[in-house]
Length: 63
Length: 153
Image (tube, rainbow over all chains, first blue to last red; front, side):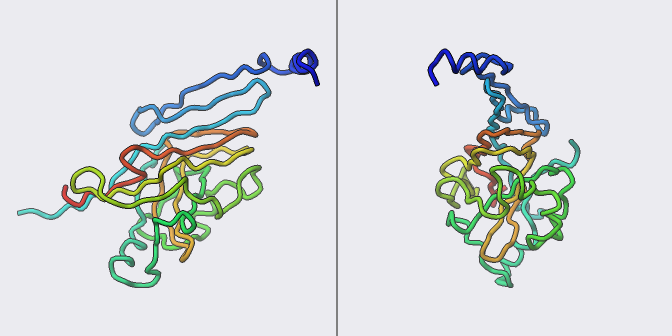
């Protein structure tokens, strides 16, 4: 399939061939930048999670 | 999204400290730790009671039939390590992101499972829903680790 045919085929898709949109995702726990999703022209989508670390705390009793 | 806190499962950690069965977590071998994706993380509770990979977890795990996802087999990213983090902290992390390719799934949390004894180590909330559609789903560790235990608080 040549480039012209590929472009023609992409007409049915919501985005221009090769175009992608990156959308940030906010971590609702702490409001931080949680990662992002990428929507591709062909309707496929990637998801990239960026973890927030957490701690188990050894807390000695004082006093 | 209430009840989204992350945590360590108390009973497996208790048993490890007590040398009770099951004793082996072996968290630093990529082959022995797997990631379970959860689609209903908010309802996973039981940090004080869960001690095995049972329906308490599988009820909320992404379906085995989800494209690109197979339950219980996805190894952690790169090399997992457990060592000194910041001062006084025991840090657990991976050297690379864990990825599912050609995946169609939505997840908002994960559980790490020690496969040798099928014991859950920790649950981590993502803080939001993430969706992949015939794409790549990846999870990257924080610079301070998946989790750390502050031994000198």
